[in-house]
Length: 148
Image (cartoon, rainbow, N blue to C red; front, side):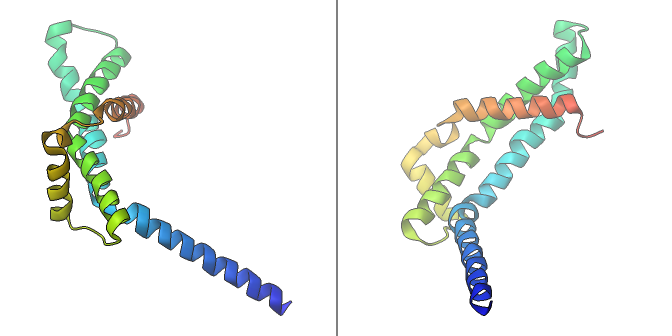
C-alpha cells in the first residue's frame, strides 16, 4: 500500500512539473502581448460595433437589427483585429525568443527583435485568418449582447 501511495505521489509531482513547465515555456513568454491583443481586438470591436451601426444608418437606411449587428460586428472586428496584428506578431516573437534562448524576453527585446526581423510587416504579416476569426468572434458576441 505504501508503495502505491509513493507511485501516486510521484505521478502528481510529475504532472505538476509538466504543467509548470508548459506554462513557463509556452504561455508566459507572450501572455502580455496576447492579453493586450485580445482586449483591443475583440473587446474594442464589441464596444465600437454599435457606433459603426449608427454611422452606417444614413448610408444604408433602416435595416433589420440582426443584419445591422452582423454587418457592424464584422466591420468593427475586422478593423480592430487588423489594428492589433502587431501585438499578435510580437506575441509569436516572444515565444520564439524564449524557445531559442531559454530566457523570458523583456517587452523592449521583443519589440526590437520583431522590428529587426519583420520591419513594417509586423503590422500586417499573417493577418488574413486571424482577422477573420476575430471578426467572427466580435460578431457572435455582439449578437449575443454580452454587455446586457
